[in-house]
Length: 370
Image (cartoon, rainbow, N blue to C red):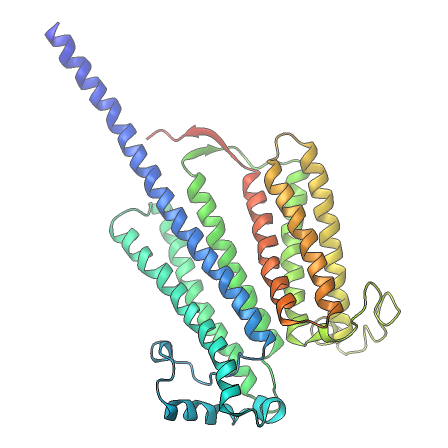
């Protein structure tokens, strides 16, 4: 009896050890996923701040790229005067804001300063926990290369942002290059999407995943994700050339379905990025196609009991809100509040589409055996 008792105790101890290790692994994955979700939320705020900065014309108010020294705001009147003197040397001041004084300069300065400061905060919020998780061995081997890739992409975004701002210092420029603006937006959204997808994958990696659904829903959701991304890029060009300030009627443009002068520029590809009429029409068309594709996706998804209903309904609601915001922003000549909400909600639409796509290969509920 004594021998049997000792053997049973030994077996129970061996069985408990894997469960304990598995629980610790799950807890660690949960912490890492929560950290990545928090960083993604900070990037969402950053994109929204960037929209406000652009709409208020504040992005060119800081003429220096000082990643470390620039974290401190001007602390003396002499420093304010120095920075204002730099700003007065660029075309935006002489062509748009001449004579608005140092008080006007300070108003636009603080928005751009907050935008850059938040960018620094995102860098610290990613790099410092990454170093700690890595040093304590909490990042599994398969996630280490992706994490380094995210770190490098985040660093590249800072450089792209400065190249964008610098384009506004050129002769006769009163705003940044639309091409660099779109590049800055695309890198930000790529970083956001990559961090969100990584967080979703880590959070669900404790379960055995079934293969992605090959059916109609999966294909339609992929299409929606693609259309959302392309529509956002088209919206970046609308913002970059201020195309939303023209043709402020809907659904027609100057009484026409396709505006006059749609293909007026040569070579033809320039119409997609520089022709106000074409850029705005393309954005309208893409938004409408995206809304229709989303409606079809939701109709198919809600009829399929294997598809999670909540992400489908959320996606449908966000797309409807985005379309309404876009029309309202256009009709009211792009007010700052509506323009900012339109940009922020675009990121939420992208988020909902990615969450739905990720959820189509849902965990089966069985844990990996440690």
